[in-house]
Amino acid sequence: MAATFFGEVVKAPCRAGTEDEEEEEEGRRETPEDREVRLQLARKREVRLLRRQTKTSLEVSLLEKYPCSKFIIAIGNNAVAFLSSFVMNSGVWEEVGCAKLWNEWCRTTDTTHLSSTEAFCVFYHLKSNPSVFLCQCSCYVAEDQQYQWLEKVFGSCPRRNMQITILTCRHVTDYKTSESTGSLPSPFLRALKTQNFKDSACCPLLEQPNIVHDLPAAVLSYCQVWKIPAILYLCYTDVMKLDLITVEAFKPILSTRSLKGLVKNIPQSTEILKKLMTTNEIQSNIYT
Amino acid sequence: MFVPCGESAPDLAGFTLLMPAVSVGNVGQLAMDLIISTLNMSKIGYFYTDCLVPMVGNNPYATTEGNSTELSINAEVYSLPSRKLVALQLRSIFIKYKSKPFCEKLLSWVKSSGCARVIVLSSSHSYQRNDLQLRSTPFRYLLTPSMQKSVQNKIKSLNWEEMEKSRCIPEIDDSEFCIRIPGGGITKTLYDESCSKEIQMAVLLKFVSEGDNIPDALGLVEYLNEWLQILKPLLLHSKTNSRVSRQPTEWEKFANYASDKGIISRIYKELK
Image 1 (tube, rainbow over the protein chains, first blue to last red):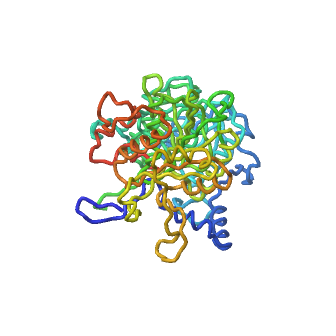
Image 2: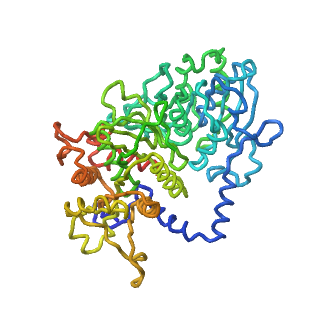
Image 3: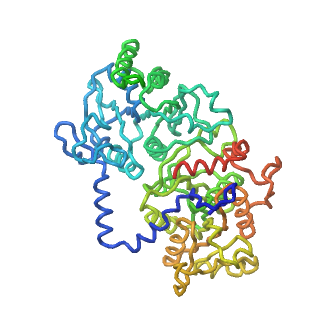
């Protein structure tokens, strides 16, 4: 409870997330029916990694099955568009598998037949060098699914001889700084790297006390704990939907070791990107 | 599970483990930040589980350009071997249904690592106090039976107030009395589990409300210090430059958000 400035007493939300205390008590009083419902929901939310052709589940994690020297992960539609235009169009990439998952953010209630036009998470490797992997993840992976995703992709025997690069976006209002947010040159890049990542980033590192969460944080945490060299490039933007300027803000990464040798024709890629934008634009103004 | 930063796990036999409970006002976590930062404890490993919401950021205790780029995750372990202290810091909230498994994993690590005792820093909703509690100090302590045997005399000499029992179901007049810590997160679970597993555990908590909880954290650390004497007496005024307690660098931006609830609390809120 808290008294506001105007003297009314309101129930202040508890920052520590302990509103779920009731849940703890319920856990002790859980009936078999409650338990069944909870397990059913957990099964519905399970993350499954499927092989491309056969659509059967992979029996081991992706990186236990295939050797990997480089892994580039794009999370979010702008990062995905960047890799699509600049990296995937510069080489021949073969789909290896995809992750299927459902949560409340998915626009469909059908968990078994998610079409590829809806949010997806697909894994590719480079035909000319199959140890180079790429993941295009434009679906939201909920917090109870993030560790499952890690388990299915990285497995429980982490290998240190690979390099991970993660690209994602966040809204500029999440960026904490003593400057006024109006003066920030958005979109702009920041990076976070693990202890074992020895190369330099192409942009400044993320200043304290900024933090990252969701899937990018889950991957980076895993890499930090298991001493895998990894770098996260974070683009702070004021437009979260697909936007040309935001995607182009990732361009400095093209000159880094992470993407070395994977990008061929930049002008052509820029053209492809522009086309991608126009096909996704919804034509509307208040007069039509 | 505990994953060391170096190649081998450090020897924690006989150490005192300090840890926060994610509780109202994040007081325990703020107090841990203060302790780790002031004592300049060094990171020795991570407590990696699937129970906490993932988060990463750069070193919140950075003092130089060099150490400001070390990555920090949601559950890290620091130590000060000269004082036989080990500290666990938790920076995010629990994933649904995972708080009990976390307690089990944590206590099993406490046992296997050989830590002598655990001290949990926590807080409880101040609006849930009864009349007697309103008139007394806002600090309380709780000891597990095995801890009571070793420190009861010391605690008695400090004139501390033990956490009172209250009705299990407040609305029902004839319900039993038990220890309740509303707003304390996993505090009660940890306490109960430690009692049954015969782990020496002490809970130190303060009755607080949500808001600017940095003064509450300072108070809780002073309370702990009355017992452990690990820090020189702290100054209450956080703005003085000659402060004996060193606030983590990430708290610096708090000064610019005077009307806000503080950066740390915003960070922890963001993760809710």
